[in-house]
Length: 588
Ligand code: ARG
Image (cartoon, rainbow, N blue to C red):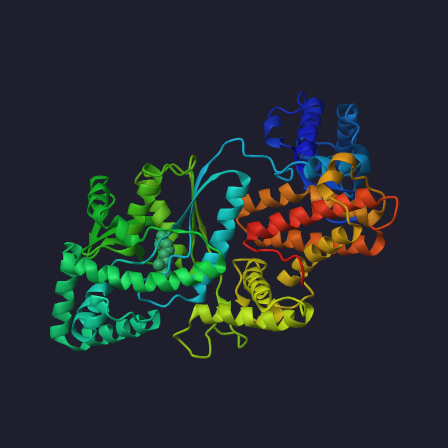
């Protein structure tokens, strides 16, 4: 099914070609036509803005050009007759109003399409979404939580659109820190390594800190730790067992969070690429991209300078022979292009690492590992989570912030809120609903703010029933379920015998918004901003409430049509929320 904007863009492009091809040499630069959604109802439904640019090239008055375009548009669209009115506005915009019946036809098609009118892609892409990526034996912080929530949602979007999606967890599971930790555990926590004792991730974190202190203070310990690194790199059995044990303990903690968040992800940590690093450095040397600087092998790239304006090195091999974060990312990039055959790779990592990714992408391009014309590499960066004091978010316990506690708090607060509303359900059912609302609230609070901005974490705000919150959207869905129940009609049967038609103004406004579902998803495909979808859904819920205020559903002549409109609203809401990673409730 074509989107309204797509249809209008097509006929407007045809009109531009027909009208001006003979007068403008390079007509292609004006194609496709510029069509946007109208910002206000009084400006019609869509707007074509091409006349202004065309007028410049033609050296004509833009309003005259607009009027010529309108004539062409009229003759092209005549046979389909879906345009109600066209009007010139301001300096030469064309406001387009569509026929009600045409919008209703679109809605009927959308309702009967299991994919809700969203077209499958012309070219199916292989898209890797790398997200979450916490570090073993280190703190899993709210930054990783943001990455997890945003990444899961982008993965779901591309899956829904019909692409081939691979979700990767680039866990920090390799590096010199493991030498220290293994040396420490061997001396002080033998039972942990043998498997007799299973500690929590927070214990592991504090041992990691202790081992680091020892490393800096105690020369003997330092030596032992360094030998452990060599052992690990040589993959000695004992070392690998110890390393696996440490990873497993961390993994269990990550898994608990992914389960609660309903996140699916494949772990492919830094260690996966460890055997490839040497080859990467050799290849870069062969391509003459490496410059030695104070013993380290570096890549220098045009335009990248430090604060004091000195060329900024990307260190690919340290002077002691060790490899770096960047080396692993180069190896991962090559693997994703060459082995995985990805068309697009998305890295969901905090904005603090933006320079790193710019340099990795640029260096890889220079080395010929990918052609930016053919493949897309996107760093999807995001801002930090702030506490109510405006500082970086920390739980009361300070640095050993446990994400799982944060999520559990949201769930128990949600339970408090639902207790009265669901007084007649079993404890088990109440817990289930509370988990959905609590987790939805945390996710939605994150996804609904522009990801580049910092946002303040507030349980109270995220759990409000009014405003742009998860609960407000869930409530619209719940309301529709109860209307359906009240009428006692089987909607699936009704779909075969009845149709949506639009009469009231708020009904039309809801209908038009439903038709724009695909348009809003396409926008995220381009900008990778999940808040475009949350904004769309928030408006959908608002438009639904306005419709419901103005238009009776039950017991009127329009009952069947309106019930179907409600059903379509519920389906779009549920699907949109699913793409954001949220579940719906049938009652609340
Ligand atoms: N483990 C890293 C961290 O916690 C994030 C990894 C991001 N991904 C990457 N390909 N470098 O900061």
